[in-house]
Image 1 (cartoon, rainbow, N blue to C red):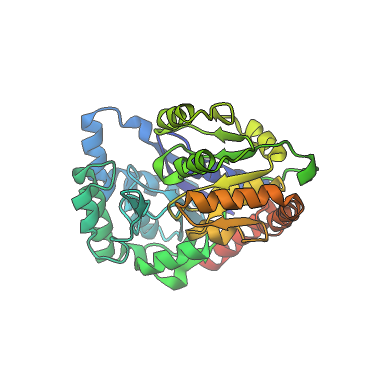
Image 2 (image 1 turned 90 degrees about the vertical axis):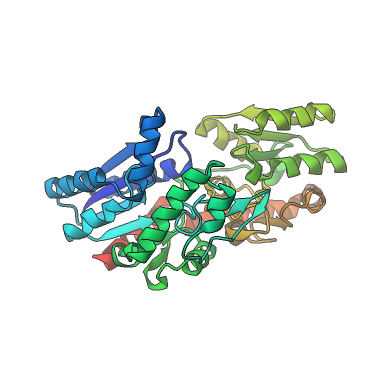
Length: 391
């Protein structure tokens, strides 16, 4: 099969970019001819680039022509769009339609439901714009990059293409990552019959450590930003005298604030900030940790970190919120705690420390779930099933 992948890379590479490359490699490993056509936000370097990108985000004729030319040259059987925002724009759908090529769109975030792509505002989940024709709330609050102007551009894009039927008529199938996300996208107005669930995956990794053989520390891996809830995890330590060391892997806008908070509380000897680490180091840390903690206070999409933990037989403590509570089963592959509640998180951490045998069982269950749901082989079958239905 010949496939054309379209993707707009972010300025800072993240999980979405990893997924795109992983799927491309997976398809090529199974004998498919794959070409990826990318834009990169690094090309936006000054105010004029920003203005051009803003206009093109609603509809880019240049992107339409570029995709049409590539389809003519390559003759793909499927075009798989991962991210069109902002430089490619929804014009790529018209390019595919004009050439008679079916389109699959993976929804890595909530952009078509929420202009910010993250239903989160003022420190809590926000659904003000989900299901509305015109997402005025996002404009009023300047949800996207704290800018009413940039928020207006995205609101105009989603409204225009909703009114003209782009989301219903030009996309043959949407891929979402969880049942929870599917329900939210239906609430946002996407056609339920076109939405398929296919989670993210990671390549297999062998692990031999049982819970009793692991080192004595907890692990957090992720971006250090407000919605990730790392401050709540630190509060759980500071206010409840949790004795087990915590390693925090990742970087982000809150890093200095969080480090200062830890130092002022006198916990620098117990809570260690490791910064950004290569994937190999992260996987080594996972294979040795007691368990992973994800205290996010928003819905999340599908954190690759959870699947990596499952592959490492590592149980996970997550906020009982959105997709996280769906991926991690309470008392099966980990534990749930009330989102934003540091006391409840501390209680669950203490329970996990006091019940190593149960946590070891959860880790074994996590590995079994990984092998049954999140391997490359399983994911390939799911992806091909969607492609074949669309064709």
